[in-house]
Amino acid sequence: MPETIKRFKREFSRKAIVMEIGGIRPSESLSASWFGRVLIGSVGERWPFFNQKPMLALAQVNVAGLPFRTPGFADIDFITVFIRSDRLPLPGEQNGTSWILRAYNSLANLVPLEPPNTDSFIKPFQMNPKVVDDDFPCFDDIPVYLRDRIRNAYQENQIKNTDSFKLGGWPTLIQSEIQWVPFNQHSSKPEYVFQIDSTEKGNWMWGDSGMGYFGRDTVEGHKDDWMLSWQCY
Image (cartoon, rainbow, N blue to C red):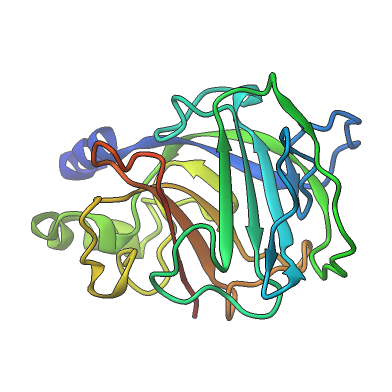
């Protein structure tokens, strides 16, 4: 292997956790990680609605129970994700509108969340974490000065990005670098934290077999703010 590719792999490799859906006997624990189901929330919290319709449960993830914490989750033990039922979020729509991500610092005070009848088309599956030791960026995420040097390695599939429901690692890009808002002019500088993939098994699609990306703001005073962007074919 050429030394340039070896150096690239050493410098750009990131660990990640893939959340595999199904294939395991479901746990009875309310805090287990699920795709298409949300079971708990804070005391007094209610199921979210949008335009007087219950939102769909997209996922809950027990971060505290994962093999390790990926970047962006150092102070978070549990997350839940909801999305409106009739269309995908538009670029720049904020958390708490057409989509909702709730993050919790501790599992200790979480209680059962009573779901309404959502008539959800999403198929629920419990998720099982799998560690990926070497996840690499998609071509659009690497520095421009390196692209000509390692272009062939990408074309020959020597350098791979792991798609799927994934925490950490590198985002699986479909069209370009992530644009968190139109023209990517965002003052709080969000950084990618995790992604949720389209899945035929779970009956969920971001457009045409796309990918949804979730980022957390990095500027002091905004670190509890989350962003959503998605791309498709």
